[in-house]
Image (cartoon, rainbow, N blue to C red; front, side):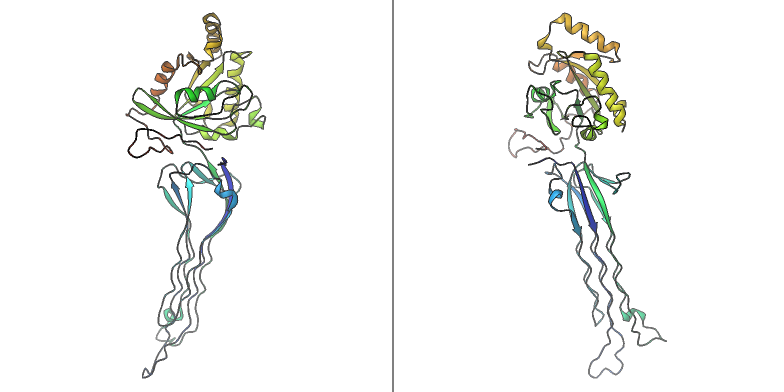
Amino acid sequence: MHFLDQAKIFLKSGAGGPGAVSFRREKYVEYGGPDGGNGGKGGDIVFEAVQGLNTLIDFRYAQHFKAARGGHGMGRDRTGAGAKDLVIEVPVGTQILSEDKEEVLADFTEVGQREVFLEGGMGGRGNASYKSSTNRAPRQHQPGEPGEEMWVWLRLKLLADVGLLGLPNAGKSTFINQVSNAKAKVGDYAFTTLVPKLGVVQHKGREFVLADIPGLIEGAAEGAGIGDRFLGHIERCRVLIHLVDIAGEDPADAMQIVNEELASYGAGLADKPRLVALNKLDLADDELGDAFAEELRDAGAEKVFRVSGASGEGISELLDAVLSYLPDRTATETRGVEETEGSDEIKEWSPL
């Protein structure tokens, strides 16, 4: 399945049904009078966040959503049938934006969250409703109210407790494979990870969701490399893990590049708690590790964790620090991760 986190769609709620013009004509009824019923209400456009969806790929093939119109009124004071609402299912974490992407119109953060987005038009009045002592044979009626319509953008932000970021080849995929049930692709070339990846981490009786996003490079905010479009997936994270490659040319410079891209992106990412981890410790000796850790502290890191995603060295201490930023409960709700009934095995959740 392809991963799609943005889609533009057209929405139109149903129009109300027209009222009827009718007169009662029955044998032995001398004065029948008007009996045209009202029209029915048009269908609403409703969005609902459901479990089991993790991409907006369905909206690539269906961009127009129109609710049914209400039924027309009929004689004998019969009101037209109201149209059924059109329910659009979206993944948890979906935001609805205005056409210019300047305004967030709705935000779905929980399974089962449901919102009437566009209301259907009201049905028109039939001629029976115009009857009065001075207007005994009215012939006027109302057409139904038109439905509302608009273009909107859907944007998916994956829900995770912890975000994983760094330059390309910082070892993020190896790290998430080491600490979680994810099976991210690992390669010795830049941008091995092309789309965000989620994994469930179990540590000391607690559980949390870790999100790995494609690597950032200098100028990502201006579109360099893959750009910064996937940074939105870590906006909701409580804490970020910043992996720095110990085998890189200048770890302090690498950390600064990512810091500047987070600041350029905005959305409060630069202010989120961040744990700096000097990765690939297995490729360097202790002396080099001490020197690079000192450089990172001089560059602004409060504390530097030395870890190895390949061997697992130092990871337990880093995860201990992560738990201190998470709610103090036995297990964090693992959104989007399904557990097989009658089994302790946890299935991998991935946007792919």
